[in-house]
Length: 454
Image (cartoon, rainbow, N blue to C red; front, side):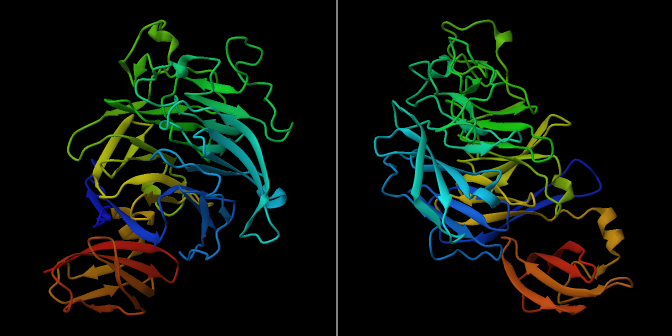
């Protein structure tokens, strides 16, 4: 277990108008191996614990005492990639109360099951369970685990190649296997499910009707861009390359190449066709280095409203290095930033598009905050913060705004104190170092200013 969490990340952007500063703020604590974070169209976050429990985290950062769902007795988690791995709420959850989970059972096989909420909106009805699909798993690893409803209202299921190493059974390229695929099913038209008419391999005798994409190794986390419906997949590599796949909304039938290719590099081309038949990642990175990278944790395209500098960027992480990174689809560039020293198991998105990550072993849900301050923002805010650096007092002056409160964060992103309705702040008792003033005004504007105490 990691003993110390470094939660502030500083890095320089290539643009001269601002420097980027990202903080991971502790939002909820006390979870046991959190692996998935989802919302149900309201302010609550549902945190999935690998052993088989789903808990509710309120918008104030409080965890409800009673679990939303506890299926620990059904979940087999003897392997470190097994367990309760995925959660998806039906698009009409507000009216029908249906949700879906992805877990490995006590035999180690993947199960997709449907549940319904009880009369208590914070507790599920365990008796409502209905198994939709069971997929045999030959090994304990590479189970995929993510499920999500697309903008078309269908349920997408990411499956790993079945495990071991190098896909020894060549499942990912086998159209008659559900392993190493992206599946797409209709949970509304039939029982236990139907096949959408526009699935790409319907009535293809060589490929199962449920299959949407072929040739994935272990798509641990995928997501849909809430603005345009594009799919983003973080596919975990074998021993050299981690990959990011970007699929425009509505595109189907793609083959991402595993095990013929790992990323864009040849891995095992026995029986493989011409390279033009495969789709290569829009971005990839190498394993190794310092800090050591080993496995991508796919994330989301940021579509929140609080941090405009992140808008349109795809955020992801590396599980081993603890680094958070961005990929810019406009410039086709990716940027890795310093390690947060925690094993990031998953990203989560709330109803407003703000992003979170989970630390697997520290059990903390962190909120991603971008404390970038642009020159334009400072001018617009018309708030003077001086002197900086300071040996003691800091003065906040504005002819257009009233300061309602100032949150002071230390270099680890931890809130030290909150000061209300004061324009003179005393830092004489603070240790020398870097602090961040998060200034809230009467017009609900927020200005973040880096302060140096000497």
